[in-house]
Image (cartoon, rainbow over all chains, first blue to last red; front, side):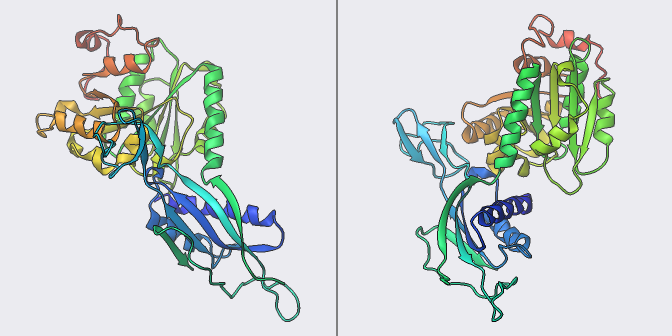
Length: 147
Length: 239
């Protein structure tokens, strides 16, 4: 279970990125995740929720795009999506191939930033209490949480 | 003030810090002329036994050392120290893997120029270590005959990130009815073309071949060409 330290790295990275862009909070973090990253999606979602408490990402959504493993098949001279990571072979001609083109991703691809909410005194509140509903991002394999 | 969120593209590898440090370590190892080999496996697969034998075999002629990671205790370092090689324990507390920073910290008071070969024994775990580059030149993944032939299918990612597979405890193969052909087929299924060695840390079987593959310079074929010569090399059996 190393997902907690991974989540903390993600939050640290996003916090720095947001700080460099002025007085903004992060409302969502978009992550691309490959099956060969060694990271389990559900454990990461749980860890993110825990690790974001008390940070500028508290209450933000983690949007995970799971990407499949793609290998290069030398026989077909084509890149192919493999059916299972238990079997690194071309789904068309069944040639075994070790050449991974995609699948190791553990990549923060984008952040959704918004200004901090302002209270009646005109001072930015330190506990954001609202969440902006966004249209679902593209891709059917995405999962998100709102903590 | 607009409350409309704006989408900002980032594209940053979450493990960028670790990967950058690992790259820098790899360069330092290369500049110092030290070969770095890491070992990963489940707990109890025989990493420490194999490493103790390898250190003992290499030690008379070559400057070898080891870093060993565990959640707790310094038992493994004590076992490895019997080889007379310099050994340092990295106690990770609750952390289930080594990362590049732990390796760098452990090496601060060692002069790499004094070493020919450094082994890094990871925490026994077939999941988490797969995410962390340690700057090693070669990563060995061990599976013992007592664990079952389907280990590679259960943990494909760790096999995929390793360079060489080592099947250990071959002295128990008959007792456990280990199906070698199935194990090899499973390894090839998750990592086509992977080189596999079958060894016994206890009897020394397969060790010359493994060492020679790891570094022909350290172990010329002429020195360890047969088991009988290994048996005569003064390595205590069944330690």
